Length: 339
Image (cartoon, rainbow, N blue to C red; front, side):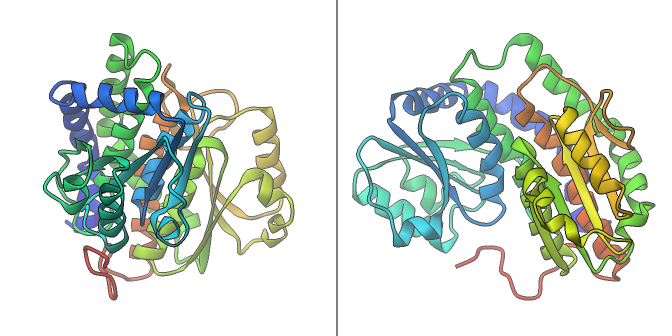
């Protein structure tokens, strides 16, 4: 089996493992990370590549719980960072060795700035320069971040949830049920993706969403550009409505990701769908959408739905690559660790 596809399909079991590990062996580190966030006047989340999109669900949830939380690319912090006092930095990175990540981690340590690392590589340069490391025990992907994306996103959400009451017993049960749903339905979803007319040799594709779902829209653009090597874009529903909607005709291909549907977002969908474009819809079980890609409802924060949506969007990138005759997940120019 293609390695990219295998990594996609392995996610439900890996997520169960990461959840159990995080709430048992790492419960103390997660509580300490939450405490550090509460005590900091300013929290900066930073990374590069797909890991910065893994941080976005965490940032979305934290922004509801902390008055000053922002996300900035590490490369930008390296050229313009005033290091204000009482700032806590959180870096998320699969390898912990990417050029910007390793350099910035060293700068933070040399300046005695607080740094929390969330990484799959606890012996990395990143981890060695952090005051606290949360280890992601998921197995490494072949190249494109699939398990790394969802497992690190999960850990970030667990930390953010700890600022309230943490994960309750009922919510823990719901998370396990969610991962069970992913396991039961992964091949069914893959078959539907494979047969979707939207994904057959598109010249380009647009990922649209709002709120926490923007993390998946932006990751979807990256996955498709990496795996299928076609021009891809992302936008919020609202911004797309203000101009870029002019692109829609019978040649338009898009993925509409609505993880928090309401009357307004469904109205925008109906307007876009009426213009004869090709839209694949990913949403939540309920009254707004009749689509083949409905994620189960749960009582957790909306941000947790990003995990299931990510698996579907990864399948989208895989299928487009296959339809174009490529080897999904193979790279021409990138090394595993970007220096």
